[in-house]
Amino acid sequence: MNSGLYAALSGNLAAMRRLDVISNNLANANTAGFKKDRIAFESLLALRAGEAPEKAGLVQANDIYFTDYSAGPLKQTGNTLDLAIEGDGFFAVNTPQGTAYTRQGNFERNAAGRLVTKEGYEVLGSGGPITINGSRVEVSARGEVMVDGVQVATLQVVDFPKPYAFQKTGSSQFVPSDPGATAQPVRTVSVKQGFLEESNVSVVQEMVQMIEANRYFEACQRVVKSYDDAAGKAANDIGRI
Image 1 (tube, rainbow, N blue to C red):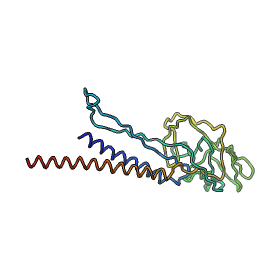
Image 2: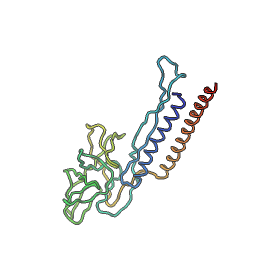
Image 3: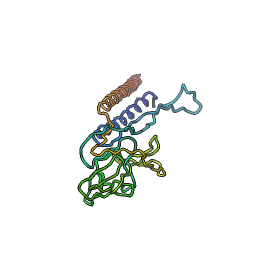
Image 4: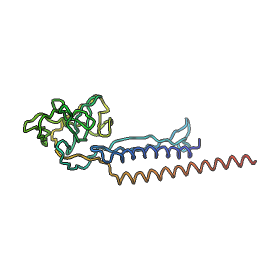
């Protein structure tokens, strides 16, 4: 295959993958605690054995996916069970696959009185799942959970070494890529009751990047068409001869 045509087709595929990432970010722009994803491309030259670099073969691109873990803005909701972490750290939650970590703090109380996520996963305290049996719930900046004036638990707020090496298990939940990674308690935790951390997605920035990706896709498509037209013209000319 012509290397120029291959490069243009690779560009089309790269633009499509970038649009998928941007679309997912936009779909979760209003998801509390969501961390936007990014995709970068690393261009490579596939050298044929014994050839000089200036005679390199097909151009290829490796996709590099990564997540931006920067904090989103805090929004005051006034809801008693809405909690946000100011600074570093993650809430620990109990999922069917094991412990996961999240910044999404729109919690609720289930029928058994357990503090759970929107998916129904138990929020973990230093001693395990947190049970709330009472009417007045207060959470201190240190994560101490008080029910009717009595402390019943302390939220398990933990962190990992940076840069984070996580895998997403949901829109706002993460697990360490290394199963042996150990979570460490956050020493200076600051929990804000009645607040939620919003998504760190900027809709304006994502829309700009979507326009750029669309234009790049269209440019690559025009290149592919020009090669196709040239090939068709050559075939017709040869046919006439």
